[in-house]
Length: 488
Image (spheres, rainbow, N blue to C red):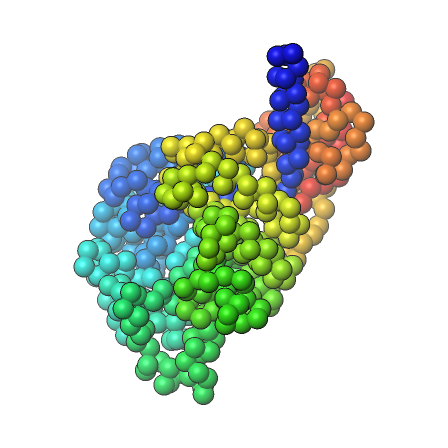
């Protein structure tokens, strides 16, 4: 009887794993501001920084992640050699001081990420320029020193004034430089547009810009128009340089409350994107200016004001055929009664997978995974992300089917795979299916993802000996699969 129960538990576990999607976005935010995630502290040696990042990547790869979102521009500074902005204090301890000996952390991070078959999304904060006016290191070359009239002092920070065209042009120039020089997969921006209202509800002092550029709009509409303008401008700039580079936004989790707008969600958020941050996310999706949205749904299921289930359902109604990834607040593990519930994150994942219009998840933030909060790292690694998945393709960017791989049998179970299209192909996916299943994605699971290299060898013994059919496909930069070639 005991053996029967063990077998039954094993079969149930296997069934759960087999239900995983082949395409699913699985990302992690890596914050550099005030050394939240990486580097762990200021002034580490180059080798310490590299070792920490490799350890971070390996942890997330074990947990089944396929995308890393790294904050490379936290405060109008740079974690890379920029011709426009100084080196970040979060690297060397003092803004404007380069690593010694000189190296390019961004190039290093991209290479290490891609070597593991993961995507690298370059995360920038568009408008924050000084994190703390009292304590932040600010170089003499910093933009707040060279163009002080571009900034508003607010809540002990310096913020770019989004109402100035020269500000929008400057931020666009920064993004153009990053996209042109680096092999990134996406530009990513978070929820900081106009700043969150301070506790005293003081006004953001942009009266002069409004008087000059307001064009008879209400101030709120004018501010939203300013945010619309930079998103459209960035979209066009990215497309002009590298049309395959994605553009994603991670907004605050509530667009607008239903009490203010019948289109809004049944929530009671004290702050909303539309009314307080002046970010009309739905317009950006509708116009196709962004490729994905990741609302920060950091509340638990059943939250009295902002229920996870309610907001998940709402966002799924307004994707406008763009990608929706859910932002999970794993950092909240253990902080409240709801977040002490070990089923909270698993249930969030189970629920989002029921929506065909949700394509995955991003977790805030990297450091939270180090201590396996509520056992969730184990849950991802052993169950929900036990099999590999690729970020879903975006047909509006790339809908081409790549050429199938050439396969050479090297032994009873060993195969070499190659491709001539080394410019477009980034790797090979090895699928397995039950012996009687038709070779369709819904029947398959990815057993192995191989980054393009030499040699590209597959040992199919574990699956063929287990009476499974095995196939291999090329994977394009846009994450499209070729027609499959069976290994037998």
